[in-house]
Image 1: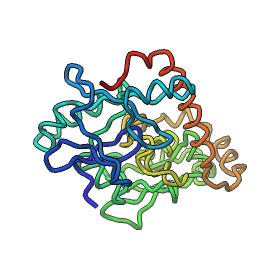
Image 2 (image 1 turned 30 degrees about the vertical axis):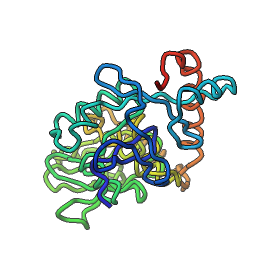
Image 3 (image 1 turned 180 degrees about the horizontal axis):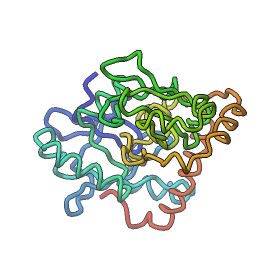
Length: 287
């Protein structure tokens, strides 16, 4: 499916009608919302969203929510998206989405990159000039133009930082056992580097969300979904305790992905957001 041009509101997908007068729930097309009733504030259309019933709610309904201590989540849709839509350049769309993430507007415009990811394309990262596809389900990287060349991560790498030894000339992983058996391996292979990776769940949040059996867009409006290449760093081998690293990997017992962790995190986020909206809810209403 081509998701490009749709928008995400607090994790749920919506699309515009052809005249761009209505907002339509992609999963429940009976939910249609007239954009003219949204409050206009500067360059944004403002609204309130109930993440439990997955519906945009009116200002009168918001009063009922306030009484029931179930404040809805505020969102802001840029007017430029409504009026210009796909005529916007990729640069402008990127700026709009980054601004939404920064200020927690609860909105995300689906560009081609996100559409491709929702259709199954795995993220790609660069390691010393070589492109690798990241598959967090298998905890591995596979070289784009040579798929049999893989970099494998220990079980703990899903939730903890991990160290990988890598040959920059051969573009291959060096087994940590070799580093222990030959402590001076660096002298024989000066191209070997130790690369520090962040937890894999941070490198592909959409993939991690899907492993927890939640919808792929669940956290798109809250957490950057694309890999942050700057989080991958090179360490000096003299700063690496190779023997301790090997022992830690050996002690690591096989474990399954922990979907409850992210569900618990989402619940904590919901409580924090409810606290925030209770404090500021009166400032955010539909006209």
